[in-house]
Amino acid sequence: MKIALIGNSKGRFESVYDSRAMSRLATLGECSPLLGKGDFAKNEEFLRGCEYAFSTWGMPVLSREELERWLPNLKACFYAAGSVQDFARPLLSRGVRLSCAAAANAIPVGEFTFSQICLAAKGAFAAQKYYRLFRAASYKASRGAPGNYKIKVGLLGVGAVGALVAERLKTVDAEVLAYDPFLPREQAEELGVRLVALENIFTDGDIISNHLANKPEHAALQAALKARLDAARKAAGDEFLPEKNYLERFNIAPEKLREPGEKSARKKTSAKKSPEKKKR
Image (cartoon, rainbow, N blue to C red; front, side, top):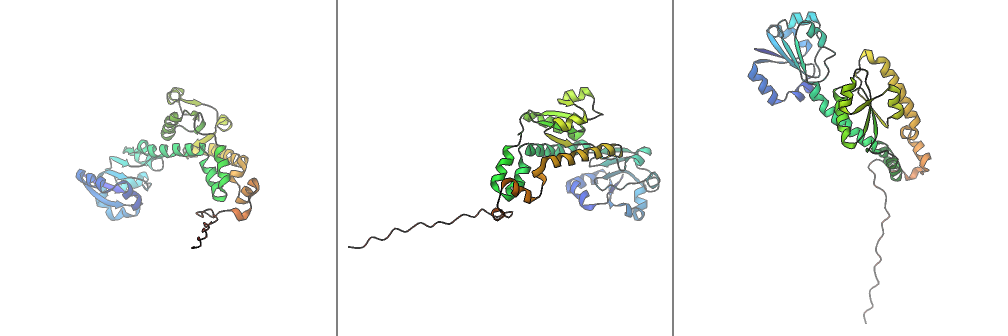
């Protein structure tokens, strides 16, 4: 059995298929070297005999005609990454079975998203900006944050990642609002999310997390989302304004600013030596 290893990025491929994975593949059949689209002509004879292909981020887009020329006997393609939208249709049109790791890939993305929501709810990002300028201001920023308990989180899109985020938000008793035209109400109830209109995501949510796929059919919605976020940033005011506005808000003298990594200056005090007793 011949196996084609396909990808335009050696670094990305090796980050997924480590030596252990490559050893396992070698037990299944004869593997090609990693081939980008520009390498196909030099390896035409081997590729035409391949029944299986393995790839990840950096998978080249192959037309139906190119598949017929280079990989006429391909039966299945195993894609160790998320979305296959960019290259899937020509493969499927030729009856090639396609497997991806979208569900597995969603786990670390969901974990990271949950962590960022928790940090935002604690005011960590605003406090970080203030802290660089004047330490006392960072305390005010964090004290004004809502915290995680009973927070209202708005999810735009509840796919593989959004569903994992919703599950993790249960651990902090968050109320999850969701806008997803494709999510069945029964599934929303199972996840414990409340389906609402797009408008309510922005009016009722304390924090909003966008999980809408970047597809042409979502272009109008993404544009509306960007306009909403720009308006929200403008309304947030000082958190997104230049440093001089921080100074005005907290009435901080410029000479009191600290450079990144600079420690606060402390006056050194030296203990007074007690006078020696005169010898009698």
